Length: 304
Image 1 (cartoon, rainbow, N blue to C red):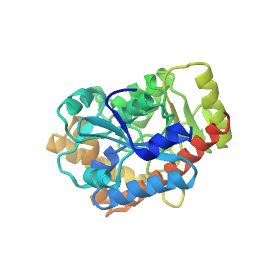
Image 2 (tube, helix red, strand yellow; image 1 turned 120 degrees about the vertical axis):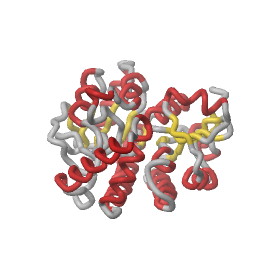
Image 3 (spheres, rainbow, N blue to C red; image 1 turned 60 degrees about the vertical axis):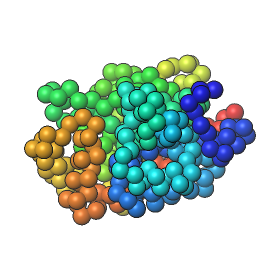
């Protein structure tokens, strides 16, 4: 076992008893939402996973260790501390060596989940190719991680702030299966449709579990994306949210925001410009993903 991994008692028991486990990221807590909505969201996500018969494992870096499963005190620290590092693959060694508090992104949560033997990971939306890529070459590390790390990611598609067509093209080029759950299109985070047709659609969790089982049996490297659209009642109007995203991107360019600071900056601006509507939608889609992701983990466990 990796010397840097530290499991909560709940996760240890789950591993011992071969129960389905669902990983949850921590960047959404520290950088994705304001307090107290962030900790309320995190605790409710864990409860949803438990209610469906799986075990939640929120992941973060604390005290020089990768914690697989957090206490309520750990969650509050992540939700309120001002010095939390946003950790992707490149940042791991430095944050652990220096004993900093680190919140894991999609990419780094996938790495930790694979280290811990966890097959499923629930998030809001994956990162991807940023708008203006032809000038900045800004591509999220999430995409490369999906190419090589064998974890199944349940999300509401790629974040709306991204260049979604290029993001999907990148995943197709790298051979990452993107499965639409009850949808023919890649969801666009705040909206159910992006206009981009997916190659794979599945209308039941059992079908997705069978696909994942076959992929594992074939020993195909890399992850899968299970694209689960935000509910119809919670989605935002496409024209409305697109105009606000464009305004937020203009603000970011004017203020010289770039790199890993870009996504938290844009999401914060969008919350302000929508008077909190985008935050409500974000929380709703995360809960929906936690529900579907935990049910899928249980479904796969029935095959063994």
